[in-house]
Length: 498
Image (cartoon, rainbow, N blue to C red; front, side, top):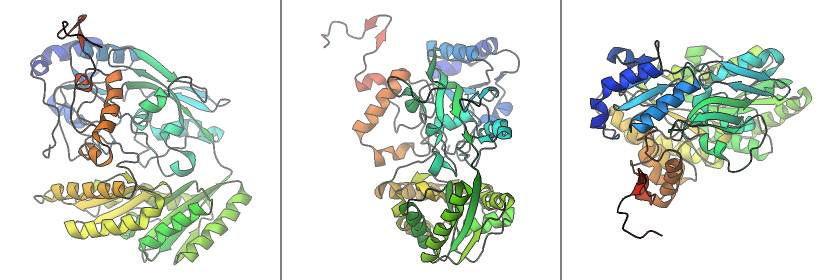
């Protein structure tokens, strides 16, 4: 796997594979267990396809009781488990392990309740992001977080990665739109956090679980808030001679107190790729393209459009189109939503990064990425959530050329180091997974990492859930001062303890 260091397979588990597979078939009967190598190929990677690994066995449960029994079985026998949703993760968070059960939640695909008076939907984790909006749109409602993969990504995976999307600037990430979850702990216990109410008592364990990347528990039910569709939504398509001017325009719009429903930017390579792919009518003579969507009452939207248009021209925009219909607004977004597959048509391979920076640092970081592009001799196409500073540089390379993948990974690591240097963070919505795991010390010192690991130990003391992800090195809870008790006996019982 491209030299990526993962936990060493447990020999005892590997020797018991046939026994484990047989026991899984008892717990999840029918077609819920996949153990043939060719059939497991479909699960060997997630969206970060540079890393691949066949699991020990694939298990697709259909009930909470089955999830509970699988986890308890594995916990009692010291067998690792990797939870997986739709597999659209771009950080390797769902990368299987050779000695681990891959617990796939895609059969949990039903919406359990739609409660319009309370404006909530209760869904199983395998329901797609877009599926929630589809279920409520006939009554004029929608689910706000909308990652580009929303047609395929699951709501459970959104919780695991704290996904965002083009409308997260105004309406928030998954964390701002999830009210409750049901989850199963590694020991098989079923726990509920939150619910239909707006706030929960005690510690914010729901906040801990959101973005926990499958390290703490397996989500089996999600309660989300839904919103009423705005009265009016219109978008501006604004072109600039330089990316720096576009970045300054973003800062000025926010600085003026305007919070758009969405604000996205693409640079020249991404613009051309998207236009060739979707034919959305993007201008091809600009270096940066900004899409600004404003929503709310019609009078307010018209007023804000005038303000944004004036700010754009003050920053040197050379073109500014304002959507005149819902179809035109959707066409503006069509190119942005299809930017990732569009870039795939202009390069044999691309490596999608994910870092977040303060908005004011956007011009500086874009300039730095151009310098890194020259240093590594690899192209880069930029697509990002400009409003909240979440960058998605797409590094262009050819995996068939020896050494280019390594160069792409080094290029990406330097981009993330630059994000941290200017006061940003390593990820915005893709998670850490294996991709950014070894960069965590760039942002956190050992004390920080140890404190985060203690949270992991509280939920999963034996480190059986998704090991090898997020933390730079696999460690035992005992190494952090946690006392291990086996069958009621501590190690070295004659030693005084305080």
